[in-house]
Length: 291
Image 1 (tube, one colour):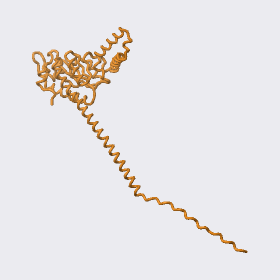
Image 2 (tube, helix red, strand yellow; image 1 turned 45 degrees about the vertical axis):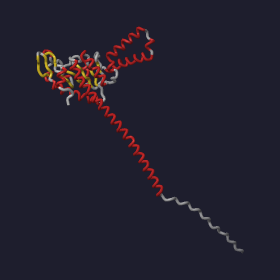
Image 3 (cartoon, helix red, strand yellow; image 1 turned 60 degrees about the vertical axis):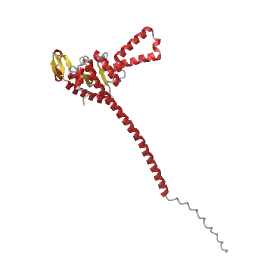
Image 4 (cartoon, one colour; image 1 turned 135 degrees about the vertical axis):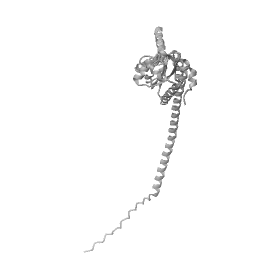
């Protein structure tokens, strides 16, 4: 069953593309027609591609891996940040720092620096600094929080990356391709879908269009997380059920051994009492004959 209907996508304006003179020829398979100099996207193909992407994202979420969402354009910032917080996934909505994936070790150091500043505030070390130093540290903390606060819990490279507007986030896409990370993206008629593993053709400039696509993606990830949770609970129940069964088996084995030992003792013949040594008959000395 498709995640969204044709009418819902049509009402949200997902079918609107860019001007004909701005189009990318690689998007030709996803374009339905041209009207008043504007390309119209084939929504039937959008539904198919959206279902494929949602199925793949669901499996990634079910396996417990992280998906990084990237959307720095104004229309998508709030939608992506709210959706990512609901499903507890990392996201970038302010600025893509160069090397965020390819130089992930340095990014982790910056995140640790941010947590170090927090510790300084908690243990009172900040109060020992001068006013000027405190202001500098506070500004540095605010900058790190703005750029990296949303990925503070990301301890390793994400297993997938979802991008809104490929042209705007081309650095993120190129880094993901270098590392072999699967890429998911909303593709408009001015973008190249050949560099994306799971392209979703649609209008990436309208808030409603972005919202309906992100809702479908968010629902798929929620389903994957829910299935993971249910599988874990089932495994825990099974392990608990197996534990007492093993104990009862061990107890029954012990009882059987005890019974077998008692039977063996009953069957065994009683040990005969040692016979008393009979006293030797005294031999009287015969008198010697008189000569």
